[in-house]
Image (tube, rainbow, N blue to C red; front, side, top):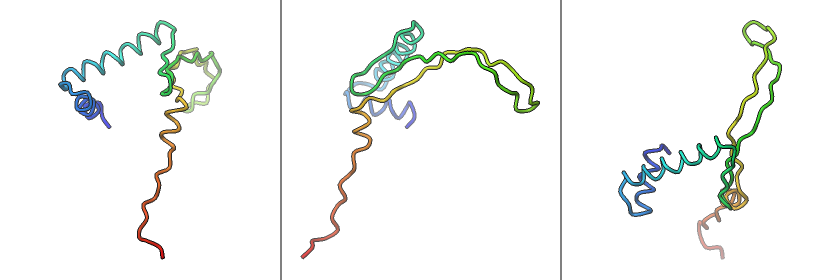
Amino acid sequence: MTKNEFVKVLAKKTNISQEKAKELLDATLSTIVETLKSGESVLFTGFGSFYVSNRAQRKGRNPQTGDAITIPAFKLPAFKVGAVFKEEINKQEKPASKGKKK
């Protein structure tokens, strides 16, 4: 699903215009980014949490030349799925019966 498709579904489910739905989605995403940049995490109970993982500096190799290089430390945004979300995704659909058994 693309962002535009998501906006259309969001607009329909909330009974607002697509313009307003796009503004809402953009504001939500930018708020998550700003919060992570400030060093805080974002928790949606039951859905999951967005957080920043700090990766330490490490040694590596250039795959083209084989030379040793130093990979600098960096921050990596991450998402950890919540239990309710995980359960919902993993629910097994009950198979439809194809006919009556006698």
